Image 1: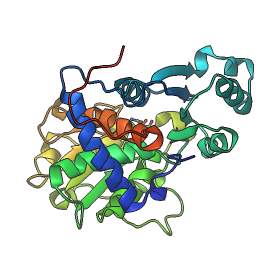
Image 2: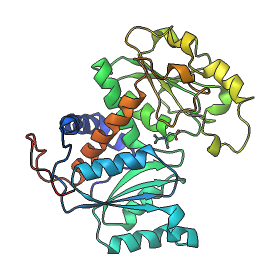
Image 3: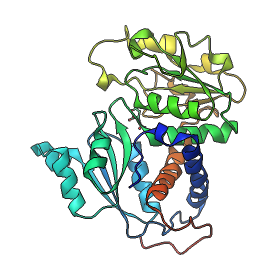
Image 4: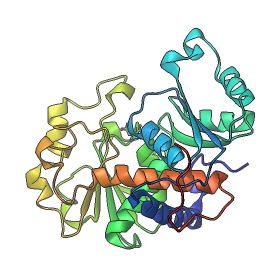
Length: 314
Ligand code: NCD
């Protein structure tokens, strides 16, 4: 069974293959009725042990547009609260007959465990600080849409690298596609050991603004911080936040990305999110097409329909 657990297992060719599939689904999503029968009869379960808005909705929208049946399992209302283990939970939903499990969990490695226990395709929708492969697929897809190629392009990832699975997956994805990645963060928000990371590290945002093609802002993940790592959020915003004045110093064609949810006034000033080179809503829109591509890549047998077809029953 194929799974999608970490971005590097795809390699550059795998990423390009999913991006090619996503192109077809972007087209599907533009239709008046954005739905194809491709995964009719398949069941996709989303299993979220950690909160999420956009990732869960994005996967569910993707599955529905492919006509798959969807089930949502939120920990807050499930027997996990009664102490049911992840393994028992998997056995229970397996018994219902499912084809794919989209899982988010606060601990690194849980999606790999589930892949061992389950006969379904497993998609990692974020595990602890570790990996978030579909985010990296949609981010590189969005960046490619603006820049054409990522070869030799400069990508700055700014902020809370230490706690960020988005950073880890994106460093791998952008590097695989030929970009150079620079991390911009205070020492306290970097992992203690960066040996083997294919990155340059700087602590001055103003020094890189003029020569990046992608400025990728991360959310300050206060829920993962057990200690105080920056003097104050105001101080962080002053040194690492993108405001109008800094945005004006970005080069022509440079884009600003953020995985959401944004802390307005911290990583990004509230009044600049509508600037044309801030592509956050485009990331969200592309996320649906890219997740349709991933589901199709894992579960689809039939070719992607290229013509308008009768929509399946809703
Ligand atoms: C990210 C996540 O949960 O890893 N959000 C997302 O998936 N869009 C990033 C974050 O929460 O900061």
